[in-house]
Amino acid sequence: MGLIILFGLFAGGLICGMPVAFAIGLAAVGGFVYEGLPLFIGFQRVLSGISVFSLLAIPFFIFAGELMMHGGIAGRLVRLASSAVGAMKGGLGVVNVASSMLFGGISGSAVADTSALGSILIPVMKEKGYDPDYAVNVTVTSSVAGVVIPPSHNMILFAVAAGGVSVSKLFIAGVIPGILMCLCLGIVAYAVAVRRGYPAETFPGWKALGVSFIVALPGLMTAIIVVGGVLSGVMTVTESGAFGAIWAILVTTFVYRELTWEGFKTAVVSSVRTTALVMLLVATASAFSYLLTLYRVPDLLANAVTGISDNPIVILLLLNLILLVLGMIMDMAALILICTPIFLPVAVGLGMDPVQFGVVMMMNLGLGLCTPPVGACLFVGCVVGGVRIEHAVKTILPFYAAILVALLLVTYVPAFSMFLPSLME
Image 1 (cartoon, rainbow, N blue to C red):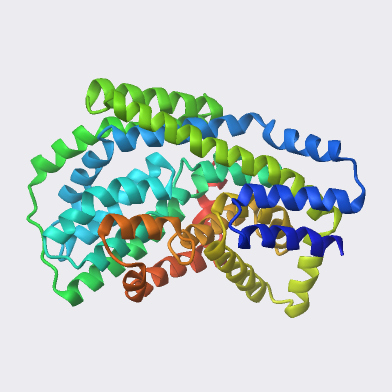
Image 2 (cartoon, rainbow, N blue to C red):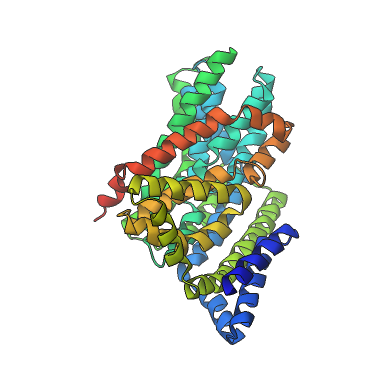
């Protein structure tokens, strides 16, 4: 009965339109009251959930991403990608994917990727004769790179929810899967562009490519500094996040000189709002997870899944399917905090490394950002592109398939995610 109350209150809050963090908190309070547990235990769980040093890195990463979005870094990365791969047939589609891979590896946010690059590339693609739905679909799906390629603040959330998985290993584990996913998307973008007869851009020459690289290098250094600092052991994740934010301010203010005072204020306000939401989710999800453990939900789920099949291939497929469906209807950060304690033991029981499972979860839930009914990236992309969601979804299936191919490869071939972390041991 307690489990029914817990999930019933949570579902009821969501149905009523309550923010996810408040719905989780309401369910947790209801569970504590029903069980007759002192509420101060719940408050202790809330405080312990956010009293984690590595969580301090999240506001720094978010702030750095906002600064880069308003400071001209995105435009320079687009020019670099256009110089490198724009000469292909339908090259702007591939440029879009390459730009997302570069910018996503700096901002760490899929929504920021969609917003920043979409506002630059979608109008250009439409002007060059690309259909609006194609421009939106490429932009939206390639933005998933932001949650897979390091640095990703969602990886930090997973590390906390998983009980201390190495953030540095999670960061480096996302590199190859992120590139693989973008490669699959690039192939689909090229194939669709050829079928629709989109034009190719003119190769600007090696000199122009070199200049574009040099101009974009200060922005690219943000990711190199952040990730390199963590992997080398010179800085903790939090310290690297702070240094990345400082570097972003210096680059956008003194090198590119495009960060205005209004842009800075907008970045600060947006970062504070996003950070507050994430921390509130972490706090309430900690109390919620305490009740999940009390009701032995991970054990119940493990028994239910293994009751369907004892084949690891089938069980992993079921876990992917569950995460995909949940990602379509719930916020990503909330799902990481709620689902990690539930599904991680099942995956580990099948022999999957927690780091690999973290990457698989990021790819699953990242795809959820591109799917209706609550896909944030899909909504942003459609607004920027002036395309109705129903129209975009009709032609987005090949791009979904590209991400699913990469997801299955990462799920069933551990080397894709575990090769680079193994070199750190």
